[in-house]
Image (cartoon, rainbow, N blue to C red):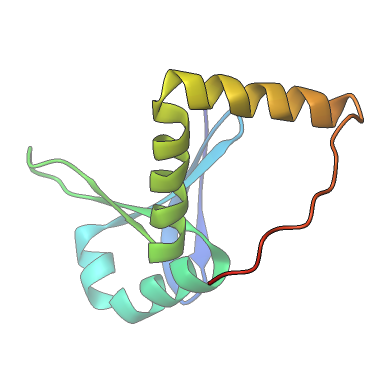
Length: 108
């Protein structure tokens, strides 16, 4: 795991790198003092910020609503085993170059 401190936009953060996952971490005090900048960053950059707290209450994650909705949609689509299998077959077909383009029906 790598650790680095530096500037994250207008505020200072610590970055933890574990394999391919990079998390920006700020303290509760930094988050409180720089909330607008942090919120702007997560919305504009599709970023995720961990807010760490010293006490035993636990840390929190801040992300854009768009990122959250995307995660929830993925969980929903893969939560049903039959749907997850159908998606896996479709991805495998696409990787083999067997995907077919189809015209969608218009919204009513």
